[in-house]
Length: 635
Image (tube, rainbow, N blue to C red):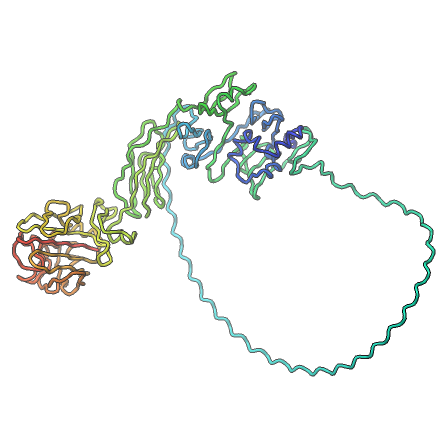
């Protein structure tokens, strides 16, 4: 059968009808052409139709045989490995991730999952993948971590282009010689008289006929060639399209090989080296995103098949089951009711909030009953470093927010996904503004120390004053006549409530200041002070980059000395401080921002329950009688 690859249909009219309208025969090749490539246009299909059947035969009732001259009438495709019976059919092979990435799989699409070593098909009834395995597979092993990509070397600097040399001077042109004088034209002579016409001569006798020339070579007989418009009078026993030697036969579209028939009779579609154990080897290439479609029939259509062949295989669209004809009856191979995929996973949890580039971030779910495999997906730029296939993964976060999703699977199919919105958290309001310049004033979530021990926390961000990016670290709106305790915050920051003098915000989430340790975790190089009181109209509003003050607020050790000469006033500032300051409390620990960090003795003070009872803003009240408002922000 190697040299007589394809037998053509004797019924020319029927064959021509098929060739002119290949869609009429599409069901017979549905499982192949659904898998095949879109480059097979009709004209090419006509020209290579015989090649596609190699080593096969197209019978008069439009069924196809591979390895047999007499395909069973009940089969659209009859793959026969006799007489050796030592080859099978290979369907597309892929991992579970590749299978789940197939876009819009067709009902009954068949693939082989290399992770679970099971056949799977897509079931429209349950909108999920179903396994053809008879028993549950064991849990899949963990996928190894992805190695890091090496750093790309820097591109060398392009050398300087050398200067173009100057053009040499042109030589002088020689002078043009004088033109000689043109001679005079001679006088034209007169035309002579035309003579009279002579008498016609007598016609001679006809000569002898010459000998016949040699007959030319006979032209090529196009009747022995296959044409793109079809052939008539073919004989399936004598005419074929194929090779007469032991070389493979390849079929191409767009000059790319799409199918090959080896000299030993193996047919490969999408693969140049079909497996020697398979008469038919289907491969969707590196993308691995296509499967195999076999004939799909309703129960009524199945029952109308005349004399079904032993092991005839179909997909029943009435029951959504694969079925085979064995022992004179149809048997279901896999049905939705016989096996069910796991339920959707529960809530996805995260061990910490996530900052850009953070490593060791863990996401997990509770184990799902009946699941043997879990498939995770992460936002672009993030990488799963361990745990893929299990209930818990560890990732290195990218710089893009997105969804963390996971599905549970077993040999029966795949569950719907559980999803958690993974938002990249920044370390300060300044980082938020740098990443999103249109950010407005308001409450944001930050993680000051990134992957450190501090939790994520909400904070108030001023995104407008002096260019924005200010993180509020101290906020006390105090009601006169009261002396409530201060709130030293260790793993949270105060939020912004009211700014109306006389409001009592003590004991609320708007009341408090960060301790030295939390201040040290925040990366800042500038401090902004704001204060006002009902005692007078002056307002404190300035910023400073004074290094001793920054160090003092971060450590609780030192003083704010130098702030009186290293500051910039901001909108609305009318106070005497800090320019008038000449005294600075030292080493106040967690109260470095509240216990008179700068003041002019007995005249102008910044104090927040200073010495236990003094609430002062650019004044010296020495008590808590007035309504006051103190704020400190950093950037």
